[in-house]
Length: 326
Ligand code: NDP
View 1 (cartoon, rainbow, N blue to C red):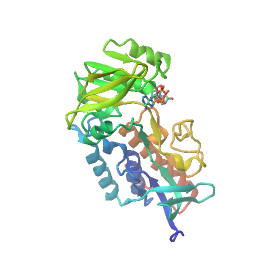
View 2: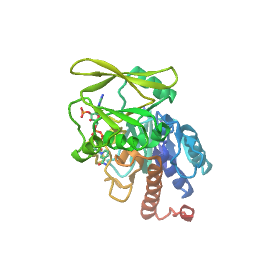
View 3: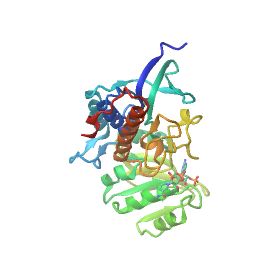
View 4: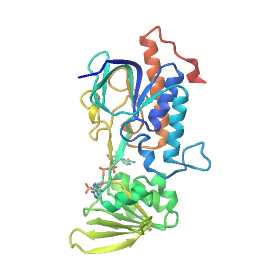
């Protein structure tokens, strides 16, 4: 049974940089946003150590710290930040219906989706151990590659992302060993050619990860095996990068929103609008190309502005706040 239905002017789903930035803008525009944090408050950045590429932090900041600052900033303007997991939506009518934890029903004038994407991992115990310790496992070369300057790293994957990230790492690291599980790349020819032609990238085909090795604190190497011969060997490395794809967190929207074949929400180009009036998207849920905290924050801002303008056009009693544009 549902509790009493709550009415909300602007509901934001997700608590990464996109969600909090949307909240800051929506709150300053009198939209009284309610933000549900989801199962991983703070989003993907909470699994990152140091963030050095977000403008405004000259000395860097840890991912969890940055997310706490963003939350504080959103709350300063009275965003109602809540624990809770949106489990179901119904965007079929004029009122956008959202259910939290399968029970609480909310009717929303506007919805901003900032549910992000999750990097896929291999799932090995040793990989998860060093990921949680922040000891050398990463799914983002652009975020973390800098910490491995002049060191040797291993990267898993054979798609465009893996090639792009291996190439990025090759400019920073002494050596990059790329593990490809089949005897060919999935990546486009041009991307594959780029890694093949980079002297400090060694590609091992038919090769998979047996175990991420470490000293209990940080990664020291990777034991791999050839899946044709079953032969094993160890590769010294201080970083283990996983680039085997991302999964956008958009399953609950698939009956209503246009998604691409991987599940990313398709937005109207140059805007945060989806195919449903009053429903907007920001951050990695719609972005398989850039996937950066700063681009997510930028699209969070766009979503709040689009939602505000949409609301103002629909409801003459709602005043567009000039503070948004200060
Ligand atoms: P993809 O799904 O294209 O590739 C994933 C890769 O990871 C595949 O090579 C796959 O191997 C490998 N893989 C999956 N699971 C495992 C595992 N358990 N162990 C080892 N390897 C594994 O993901 P991407 O993130 O690379 O790309 C997603 C989309 O984004 C694609 O459409 C891509 O073209 C696009 N993209 C475009 C870019 C650009 O144009 N600049 C940059 C980055 C992405 P296998 O091949 O054997 O299945």
